[in-house]
Each structure stands twice: as C-alpha cells, then as structure tokens.
Length: 626
Ligand code: F6R
Image (cartoon, rainbow, N blue to C red; front, side, top):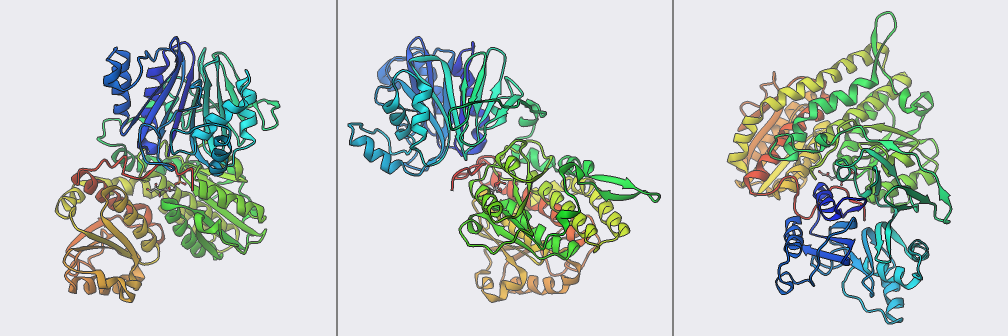
C-alpha cells in the first residue's frame, strides 16, 4: 500500500527519491510522483503506472525536452530536498492527477499521504465554501489545502492546526516552498520511519528505502510529528511539546533486501525458509538438567507461567497470517488443551466479542502494520486481554502496542505474497503452544524434548522439499492453465490448504479454493469436472482412508488429482495422478513443509502465465487501510 519517501540533505534529491520509491515498489502501487524543492521552486512530477513512467517523465524534463511533449512546464528537478510517493488507489482511479504529491492552491505546499482521511468529504465541502477548488478525486488533496488555510509563515504550526481537523489514518510527508530547511513528517495508524544520516535525513514507509543511506532509524508513534532538517530531527507530541525519541539500529543490511541472483524476490524468499526457520527456532531452545533435555525458552520475550494460566487463546490476523492463526488454534488445542479461536481480524474488530481478562490474544502480522489487525489488537486490549504479538518487523506498531513480542526472524519479506513469514509464524505459534502445554502439565519434559527435536529437523527437511523443485516446475508446466484448482485437507492439512489456495490465486490469478475435505460432499464437489485440479494434502495419518475416499470421489468426476504426503507413504499411489513427497515429521508440524511445494507451484504458475509474482495485480504488501 502507498509508499512514502522524503529526503533533505546535500545530495540531489531526485535520484534519492526515485531510488527510494523503487525499494517500496513491493508494497503495491498504480502511480507515482515526486516533489522537489530547489532553484526552480517547488516542482512536481507525477505519472500513472509503473515507476519507470515517472522516471522517463522526470528525465525528459531534466534533459530539457520541450514542455509540450512532456506535458509539464519547464523544470529542472534539481534541489536537495523533496518528497516522493507510490500510490495504491483508494479514492479516485489511478491517474496522473490523482497521484501524489498533492499541492495546495498556491502550489507552494506539497503533501504525500498513506492512509485514508475519513472526513475528507466534510473538509472538502468546508474548503469549497471558502473558495478552494479541487483538482483530484483524492482524500489527500484536502490536506494540502487545509495546511495552506492555516499557513501564515510557520509550516509546522499550520500542519499542527490542520491535523486537529483530520480523522482517519495517515502517514504524511510535507514540504513548503517558503521553508527550504525542513520536511514535516507525521503519522497516525500508518507506518513511517525516519532515517538519521550525516548531514542528511530521510523519511520512508519502510526501512528498505533508507538502507542505502543509513541504518539508524527513529520509529514515529501515533500522532507524533518529526521536523527534519539537514543536521537534525526534532520530535513533537500531539500537544506540540518537544519530545525525545530513541534511535534504533537496523541490523539487516541492504543486501538482505536485494534479489541475490534469484529471478524474483518470491523465489528467493521461498528458498530462504530453511534459514529463516532456523533463525526463528534456535534462539528459543535451550538444553536443561542432567539429561540435557530440550526446553522452550521464551523468557527473552517475557512469557512466564502466568501466561499459561489463560482460560482461552484468541489468535487474530488477516490473510496468510490468519492461516498461521488456524494452525495455532489446532496447536493450542493439541498441545495445551486450551480452548482456542482463530479470528479474522476484520471480522473480530466489528463483532462484540465475548472476552475476559483471562484471555490471551495472539496477534500475528508480518508487517505489524495491517490496519484491521491493529484494530483487533486494540479491541482485545480494551477488553482486558493480554497481548502477544508475532511479527517480522522490529519497531512496527504491533510490536510497540503488544505486551509481549515474539519476532519471526525471517528477514525482510519483499514479495507481496507471503512465504517465509508464514512458515516462521508457524514456528512461533508452535513454540508458544508447546511451552503453554508444558507449563499447564499436558506435556512432560520428555514429550517436550521429542517435539522440539522434531522442530529442529524442520529446516533441513524444508531444504529437502526445496531440492525437489524441478518436479513441481514440471508439474506446473502441465497444469498452469487449469481453470479451477482446489486444495483439500483435514485438520492441520486444512489450514495448509487454505494458505496454498491463497498463494495460487493471488499470484497466478487462477480460481483456487481450499475445502475441508469432509465438506466436499456438502456442496463443492458439484464444481468438479475435467477442468479441475484437486490437490489433496494428506499428512494426518489417522485420516488417510478418509482422504483416499475424497480423492476417488473427485477423480470419478474427471478431476485431475495430486497428493502431498510423506515420503514413506504409498497409500495414495493408486488413487492420485501425481504424488509429491515431504519428509516425515509429526502430523501436527506438517504445514511448515507441505506448504512449500504449494508455494513453488503458485510461483511457477504465475511465471508461466506471464505474471509478475512479486507484484501481483491489485494487491499491496502492507494493508494499512481498511
Ligand atoms: C498473502 C499475504 C496477505 C497478508 C495479509 C496480512 O500472501 O501476504 O494475505 O498475509 O495482508 O498481512 P500482515 O501479515 O502484514 O498483517
């Protein structure tokens, strides 16, 4: 979802902004723009479509192409401060006019915005009544005019006044032609990071856009304002008081956010899963006592026996992270015998959920910035629940608002479709569920040791699954044009099926669905015909016979069938057309392995269909608005 960059320093701002926007492309966008403040005053260039359209437009302007050809007045885009934006359309179609930055009537104030101004209609009416005419259909444009309305020589004061009128969510970057020494940055419920450099400072929606310049960052909290000059960053709270913020250091380097020789980020991230799983698991395991048995060590995150006394576990998330929540629900019931629910955050936030202060609420989010997920967190907190966050982004809003934070050490996930974040989220929920089961007395030390030993095998087993990628690629080359693909499974396999179907639909645009296999007969089987591929995830040993029947049922309706099962199981060799194998692990841990062939299958189908798997249409990496 929209990306913001801003630069103030000694370098030419235009290339810094364009480079920064490139690093934010993964968030999803449909137009882009920059505003640069230099000798030519405030200059704005915007273009619908891919970033290269903007680059070409800027380059035409800077190389002195005739104004009529470029469609802009002559401008040089030379200056040492500016703001940039990639827009993911919410209000108004993708177009040059609707792209950001938006300027006020005088053309002296430029604003980039991520989020939604919920009361923009009212403000627009109010401003229109005062003679302001609007150029775009966006909610953002009202901000530029509103700031101008309050401007009388002090841009910070004008922004502070304007903010009092805004309802909704926003991360903002603001520059003013009359103030060549400051960029104003604000956030409320949308991410914004401040990069602290030497003689230069930056703003960005996400860290990868800053890494070429600095790894020292400040995370803005809601309603805080940052005023960036070349040598300093000053912070203010919503009452306008100066506040101090702590500088954080980002450990991962720029290379971690590069493709590293892979054709796409998604393929790189699928292949990084063994390492990501190891990094997420290893620091949480210790060996104790005379027998040197393994234990889960969650003291670093503050998880003690009081957490295990919970009456109920509610796990809230969206999309892929909700599928991790489903696995979590099964894992908590299985290991800890504790009532558990997996809740879709966008539903939960609008229900009137029955909750008690003895609930623990686990909120899962790769980005830690998903609007619905954060709303669910706040509701659970208001209802007295204690919150554990599972997130991949250090310093994210989720990490800051939760009581405990367990990080997935997956490294930056750039591809829009989540892969390594998912499997590491699973690793985290398993660890918390195991530890809860142990603390509640449902697992003894030896059982715990055995389960952890199985978890320790997972990274190497994931490597084995990845080594079989050519078979998946071949399979994809035969089936990528199937018009319907169903994933079926039971229990843990059902949760993995949900994730597999989502992956396929989001990047290959194939109509794919997941069904609890027992539900087939209750409706979905009506869809099965020769154009259907049914992939059955079969790793729940006690239910092999049931799955075999389901496979035969869809086969009898002429569907093609494939199965994912253990490497030593031959139960499905006769019923399925194709069998893919994963190494043995306890049935409850299989989603971490069985999802990998499905991720690869989705990836290859996407490429074979001519799509960009990293940037699927209509999707954004971080869904920071509802
Ligand atoms: C799918 C995907 C999305 C996200 C969802 C939640 O591949 O990535 O479904 O899982 O938008 O995002 P986070 O985890 O950042 O809260």
